Image (tube, rainbow, N blue to C red; front, top):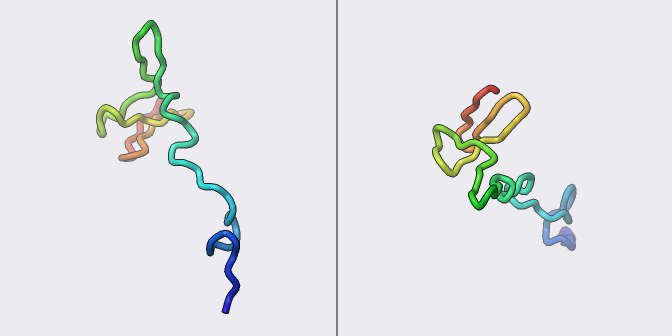
Length: 73
């Protein structure tokens, strides 16, 4: 019979590390800016997915994480 680990069953690499929240690299607050009492969007919306789905801003392209649409700069 194998001994139980203190972490609740998962032993090995990363057993005690907390999991990152989805989208932890860039928070939703960073997608908007308030200027003169109006809300300004910092990123573009995906033309295929519609309003509400932002495109990622890379060095040479804009990409949608939901559908995979890409535009070169």
